Every structure is written in structure tokens, then in C-alpha cells.
Image (cartoon, rainbow, N blue to C red; front, side, top):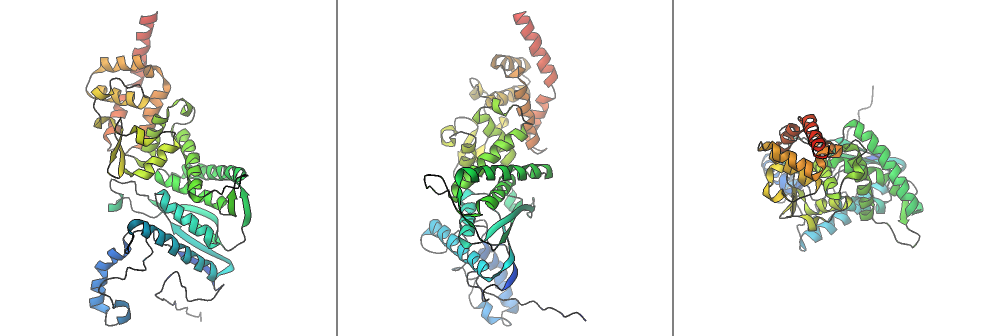
Length: 410
């Protein structure tokens, strides 16, 4: 007969594991996602009912009136100091927990860590904690774990996948030289992006997957330095990855060829629609995306399609803009919005005039940008319907514009 293995369940802190060194063959953990979820507050709902039903069977677990919160490892704070104190506490405690995993893991053991967060600060914290724990990331993969229909995903840029990191207890190389490491990261990330593109990973998840690939390279070294002795931080690593992913993605969205023809603002618009759709995004993430395309978002908001709404940024579609405000605009994306509104209003002659006078109507890049944006949007999108309607008459528009030019210039 096979021996029946009975699992042992204990309640305790991840920062103080009650096991000796080199004890486990494998450790699997899904730590809190920075400030994404109020775990203990959600637990309070169930806690009060569990206390009523089974509290007498497990009195030690139900001493407090609600769930204990002082030691919860999250980036929002239950203590003095507010949000900043909460972030510092999260990083310190996550670091301790990962160091404990390193301690109890056997030399040939494997640790799998599940994590996701759409903000740069959330990722900086994990990367810093991982590097200081001693664990070395040897592989990472995005896996769909979240329901698209969940409330958290409504009208937000919530991620649909988590990154699974495979870590080992192994020696790091002492120093990686920045120039060489950047090239290695670029090659590794692009290889991974090729595969993920074929698998249909898209939007914000795509960038997050790029971070995972970069950590595989970055984490092999105790520190990464340039020849002047400056150390590459987790924040700089993320910025570098964002630049790689941005350049790669825009070329893919536009099917190569015309990326170099686009201005930074138009590149930003195309990338935003592909990454976030029509969702609003926290300011810091919007700023980073804008930075990667070469624009200063603070100089651009409220001038055109970029709008700041409290701590969020939203990118307006053509149906949300005023036709009169677009009259003197020459930026490709602004002209496209103006053309779409004229098409919607049935002002076909004025639309042809705009296409001809701006020169965009005879440029293939203009129509390819319109097509690329349409492909990023959902079927229900008002913007997509305008784009598809305009594009359905593309051949006719081109023929009429060419005839007009021939009549004008002979």
C-alpha cells in the first residue's frame, strides 16, 4: 500500500518561517500585489461569519473583532506616515519574506513566485527585493490568471495575466557592465516578444512580460555598472525595457515600414490604444509611456487629445473632440480625428479638402495608422466604427484625390 501523505497547514508570517535552512525542494508563493487589493478588508466580511460559525473550534484564530492588519504586507498603510510609510513597509517585509525563502530552499531547489502590477513602482519593489534576497530568476512567463469580466477590469487598464518567475538558489556574477547587459537584455526581450506576439499576448500585459524577460538577464549580476561606476537601478532597468518594448510594438502594430514616418504624438496615440484601449490610466504610468515615445505628457495635456482627470490620464477619441478645435491642427492624429468627424457629419467635400491640403490623403502611412488603431479597439468602440466606416471608402478617397491633383497640376 502507498503511504498516505498528510499535509501540514500552519498559520504564521512569511518573514519568519519555522523551518531549518535548506529544508524544501520547492517553494511556491503568490505574494500580495503591492497596493492592488485590500486583502484584510475583504477578509473582514468572511471573518465575522467564520467567527460565529467555527470561532469556538479555533479560538486562537479569532481573538480580534476583525482581521489583524498591522503585519499585513501591502503597500497601503495601517500606520502613521500614510502611503509612503506603507510602500517602505511593503518593500522591507517582501525582502524579508524572499530572504526566508532563500534560506529554507535546498541548494538545488526551485522557487516559483507569482507577481503582477501595472505600475513602475510596484515592479521596482519586487525587482529590488528579489535582487537583495539572493534568489536568481532563471525563467519567467506570463500566464492568464484574471477574469476579463471582473469589476477590477471595468474601465481600467487592469492586467489579465500574472508573471510566473522561476528562481534558483545559485551564485551571481559579481559585476555586469552596463553596455553589455543592455545589449543582452535587448536581445532576450525581443526574442520573448516575438513569441508572445505570436501567442496573442497584448496591451499592458506585453510590457509586463518584457520586464520578466529582462530580470532573467539583470538578476544574474550582483550589480550592473557603467565604466564610471554608476549602478543601474531597478527603475532604470524598467525604463530601458519600456523603450525596447515601445520600439518593437509600434513597428509590429504598423506592420513595419512606416514607424519612422510618424511623429512622437502619433506614435504615442497608436501605442496607447494598443496598450490601454480607451481606459484611463494612473498619471505616472501615462507619463512613462509618453516618455518612451519622446513626448512630455505635462506639456501636451489639455492641448489636444490627452486629458488629465485628477490622478488619471485619458486619451480622447475623435467622437469626444470638437471639430472647430481641430481646424488648424497639422499633427497626423489630429487630422485623422478631424477627417473622421467630417465623415461622420456627411461633409464629404470638406473632408476631401482637408485630406488634400494636409497631404495626408495621398500618404499610405495615414491609412495604415487608421487601420492599426482600428485593430486595437473592441467591436463596440465608437472610434472603431468611425475608423472602419472611413476606411471602407479608402480606394474611392484615393482615386478622387488623385483626379483632383491631376486636374490641378495637369
